[in-house]
Amino acid sequence: MRRRIRVEYTWNGSSWLTTTVVRYIYDGNLVIQERSLSPQLLPQDAVTYTRGRDLSGSVQGAGGIGGLLARTDNGQLIAGSSSAHAYYHCDGNGNVTCLINTNQGIIAKYLYDPFGGVLSQSGPLAAANLARFSSKEFHPNSRLVYYLYRHFDPGSQRWQTRDPLGDASFFRAQIRRDRRHAPALFKERLKPAYAFVSNDAIDYIDPLGLNVYKVQLPSSVSGSVDHRQVVGDDGKGGCYILEFYPKKKCWVCLFGATLVGPGEVSVQMIKNQSASDYISANGLNVVATVDTDYIYFYPSGDSVDSLLAQDAAQEGQLGSPNYVLLWNDCGTIANSWLKHARDVVKQAEDSAPGGGDPGFPW
Image 1: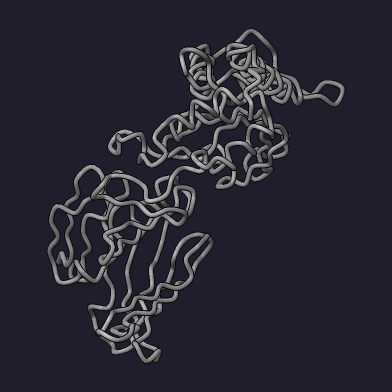
Image 2: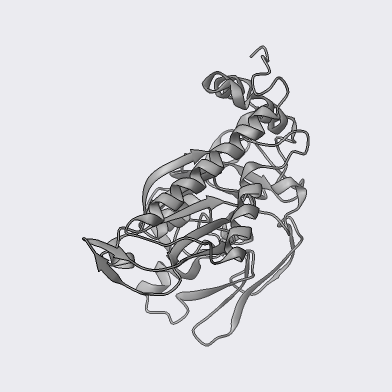
């Protein structure tokens, strides 16, 4: 799905003339260099992007939003110019607000409306720099923002192509895959297929997956203990991490087992990073999952993920359940949480019209 080449033309009255050819170099799904060519297709300047961690805390977990560090004009760099490098500054939503040079002077500045429309821009690099709203590439001729899989129009505040669920063939394929999810899929399909983050670009982001995972921590984190924890999406684009540890580190060996004392549960809530991205960023090994895709309670419409996140927060508040942790007991407790998640999924399915099998004719 990545765009490899961008070619632009102009009409001279009798034929189309090539005006711009840009080739993109990627690291995963992120552009790290744009190589521009002249109309005669001769090598010309290139722009290189230096990237760091985005809003997810990883390099690509949030699609690179908020992760831009620097922009380098390779032509000026080869010429030895001190203005070859410019450095990005972003707001809390990952929108580029300004660029500064090596002397800390502002050379580009942008102000946006809530949906990414540029209210004002200033500075000698403001037009040349294309990484703007959501740290994504802005195309001046079409006025669209490129999000890798879809183009967004800040003027009309909507996507240019619809959500995949809006496509009838995709919708029917999902129903055939699992008819139990038909009511929730149908409800999702009724939502505006072109809407950008439910028309609330200040408070929401597009969530990146809806599953509950049981994971095994790598030995570099847990030491020699075969430790388990639960990671799940919160239904709002973030995730929660449930930890099961001894309340007091009373390590006592007994017949090869390690008695560690009273158990303690803690929960960590992470914003703007899905469970799958958290797992990938921390090198965790998934040992069990509970599928919660498109599962909602009817008629309330609450997602399973949001309800499980609330349950996880309550577990963390309890803090010290009345149990004793033995070797691998964290895995047993994680299994009980996954069973709870499956029970919640079943309740949501049973609450659907027709008791989870509505018999829709798709």
